[in-house]
Image 1: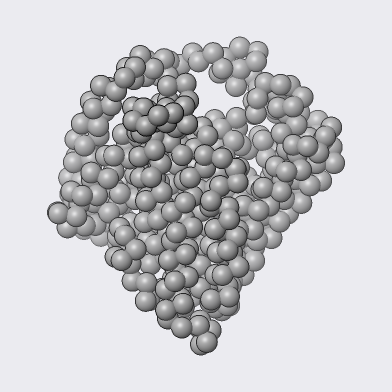
Image 2: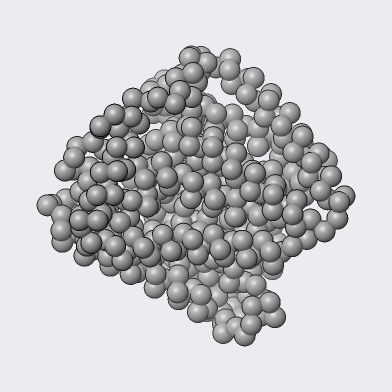
Length: 423
């Protein structure tokens, strides 16, 4: 889906400031689209997205493209308390060199996600399409870079866009690259289910291209997340479909997706050294997972430190003290980074986001499945959090904002009296 396909003229709330012309609002909407289209370009920090989202954070309320609500205030308040816990934990750190900048980034990502919640909340269906279309473009750019690097199509590209023989595209880590593609692949699947035959064929090609990139990342977490995301989406669509005819259509699209996936898997096996690396990556006994210095032993060690330090250790202190890398489990990391209060609130926020997504899926029963895309994408991110630290993944905040915005846009007759008012 491109920007020209979107009903941009209808995206401004009825209560938008009268002095803001329709042309300015369209430019503002394009700016938001462009911002999300750069969310996958993270070759180095700060990323282009960081500069653009700062502009969007200021522009969205000024142009009148967001809606303020009690739910938005709750979202803001919870993140602020989590970040406050991070700053308190910083006082326990042996040095501020790593802990303070890390907490500042958390605060930045949290603050810049707040206007996105209000932006989506003003007209959720149209604006989720706007953001996910941009997200998909960003994913395509990341995979193009990954292929250029993996097949060494440009001088020096292999060193920039791959790591240890694994594609990382426009990211600094193949695992983040692979996980980033999951929501875009899921959105392509959704579009195939809701498009004409001609357009479905084109979107299938895009989805297959993204799947090819995901496979080249050789990320076990990304593969598992993709499977769970598709399973979640399919279950929601099947259980909420109003007719058996739609269930049959879903089954046929799943069958077509399986055929495309088989073709992509067969194609990727011909990539240089892929089969050998694939065998290594699918082994259950990875050297960094097992043993006293492995990932899982680190999880147990982190649990003990959490019990002993109610205020936390400070962000990145675990890695500095033990010199074994990060915890690689975001829920444990947040307890260490923000203390018991921050860790519990973060866990509660994740659970609440899942609950809001499920509630919206139930509300949309018989709809086209857009809310199921958001739920499936977030479930994938929640799963990734058990094996990697996702607290600074920019797309995590984007998907969370989508869900909160969609939840806050349910008409009052379904959720009681509303105090929503446009800004």
